Image (cartoon, rainbow, N blue to C red; front, side):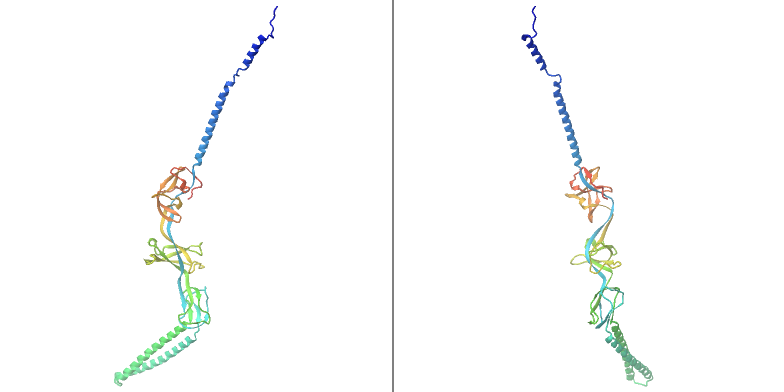
Length: 393
């Protein structure tokens, strides 16, 4: 019996080779790998695109321009003109002596407020008093001569009518009477003058005011016409201004003027126009306007203070006004930007006068318009905006 061996090399090697080839066949899952890679790549592209889209949206939001705005509404404004001048006392005079002599008494000093006719100083009365005594004596003597010649004239008049005396005697009597009458009048006038000279040795205030200077002391010998005091009335003060013709035509007597002294910059005083000159100065071509300012209690205003006077000119009772920096110009056009639905709109406007730091807008705006006042130079028509602050009124 012949048996075939299972270990025969001729039979076993092909079997082993077949098994090894089968082991090298690809696994059924290997063909899915390219698909997975392709899907992953596509998802990456999608996510990247979504990320870019989000970035674009963010850039669009940040492209809005930040601005500040003003909501316009009617306001009462007044055109003004500011001029500079010097305050002057309403009245100021030197108290001058009309008689000569030595000052024997000083009763008031600089800074004293005095009433009208109050005694300020006294000049030696000796000579003036003696002159008055002499004048009194002259009047008495003249009166005696007058009475004597009057009696003679009356008697001679009677005798002349009866023919008992000659005409020459009567004429002489009449002339003597008339001369005595004239002498009496002259001596009386001289007495009044002497009395006045005596009265003038008392120096008195010519009006109610404040003594600003004193030129003499006790013992000073003064001559007629020499100043002893200077007195000023600062209950009110005067201010003279040179006003241009354009401003002058808008002024009238009684119109209010605001006064601010350099030395009292936190204070404002009310004045009124007292007069407006009808003719211009030949050199400056301005019109003289005088303003009177009442001095408040305590008399803070003084003669010589430098002040700024604000003249109130034309009034605009219900005007739209915007800050001057909100106004833009391009060629002949004047415009600004208003906000409509979060976008900037360019709008042409008609400019009125500049009052302070604001322009009056005569046309182009209406109540409630929102005007860009900060950031407008970065804007174009239909620019998107972001309001940084609440609207200013």
